[in-house]
Length: 431
Image 1 (tube, rainbow, N blue to C red):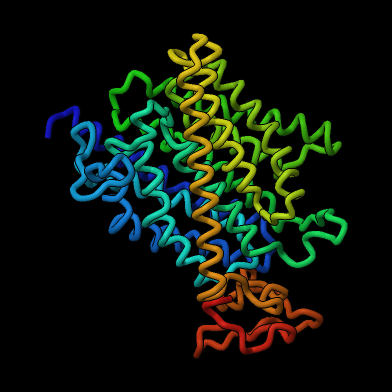
Image 2: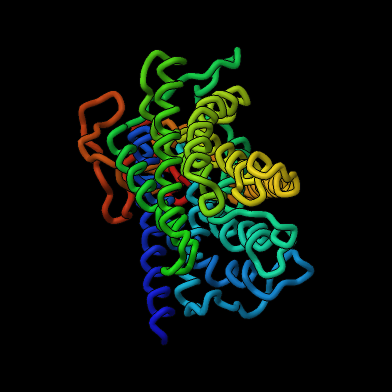
């Protein structure tokens, strides 16, 4: 192995590790933003992404996405690794991207989706749904890529797809009990642990350097530093604008909006991080941070319950970031050159991926509801999914509803005695 290839291999493996480390960020962010009684459940769903999702993509999705092109729609057969990289390094890097799509869906359906239904969702998302649209953009001969669509690290391929699937599946599973009132107004469920959520946001921000800069697949790339700086500037600008807008709109500097503003800035710049100037990266971040606040309100008005704001961050941020490339691209952007072609292609790509995500998420929700079941029972939802599905609460100091007795575990069945309202017949897998 030559020295350049060896360095590129080290670079890709290290950045793949950063991308996979982002799963820890998803876990902490979601655990902090949901209620305490569901913190174990969201953490376990991230482990499903890392296990079921990773294997589904490796065994089925990877060749569908990167195999030889068939009619510019899907791949099949052997994969040719780019840039002279060992195929194993390229595969590992792409696994991290695939499971990120599933993790986006996880937060939007938190606190009421059956665990078994989520496992099936992850397998099909990573094995089929993401690879199909991913091939259109990044696969050899994919039709959107042939049109000239630019999506350097996945604002469309990953975040728009994941956000739109999250919207469809959150709508299919329905809102949490008492989330919306008869007049259409929304009740706010306080997050369980903001510092924990912020730790998750910091990890995601850190891992995003691997997400974006690692997509060069080249340790020698002259764009590497620009990509990393654009990534940081957009995140900083998104967080700042979210702070300012939340202070003006809500009279407080809202911490969850601030975190989501920075994450929206990261999502927004992911498509164009290699194609835009530093000033444009700041503008994309600023607008993404504002957009996430108003998109959150729009999702609420649809009466779609998204406990962590995944649709606003990834769906709205991904759509905006994809289109923004057509506006700010240094060489082809509408504002920078007056050319309209790239903007039209980016708009088309954003609409196509959004439609694919909504259709796939709706179809999955419909099929799961009629087969294994999509939503937990009211009693399990009241008690929380941690004990019903996993046999243990997040914090063992928690006590029974309405009494002072601590939760007692039936170790011989690896399940926990449920509070009186839930009953002992709860399905530990479906819970």
